[in-house]
Amino acid sequence: MKVAVFPGTFDPLTLGHLDLIKRGSALFDQLAVAVMTNQNKKPLFTVEERVEQIKEAVSGLDNVSVITTDGLTVDLMNKIGADYLMRGLRNTTDFQYERDIAAMNNFLDDQCETVFFLAKPEYQHLSSSILKEVTSSGGDISAYLPKNINEALKQRIKEEKLKQVKEHNEKTR
Image 1: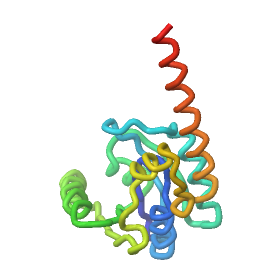
Image 2: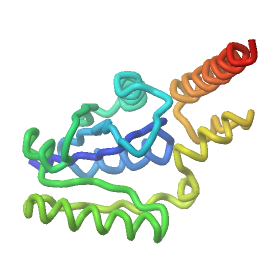
Image 3: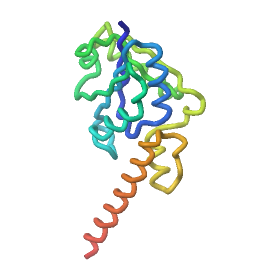
């Protein structure tokens, strides 16, 4: 049985991510989408919120599960019996970064095989960070997000802006 893990922060999950998940689910018997915590990023959504959002977005894919863990991806792979690590590449910058991570994962566990998927051209320019920035500035990025996640992102941005206004008002009093 071919079991793969697709790790990421997915804050938020984009249609580019979803395309990779669909393509991976066709290649592997089981695909675990692993919602990870990245200490270098400040996510808009909690891990639990992201897990629920992604579960809804992948609900039609029977061989896809959504999980979360702290720690090393290779430890997660060993825990669930995965031999493959699935990653997406949008450009040469992604390739260089992912190549180094793949080498480190293979050093940590020589059974870890990383499989790269090239992003489709219509998704090569996407990043969760760019989509959050555009949404925050009032842009419509609904063409790049699953519907449930687009609505959640718009709501969270609205809440964050209101929170900033309240904090500003408190400081000026």
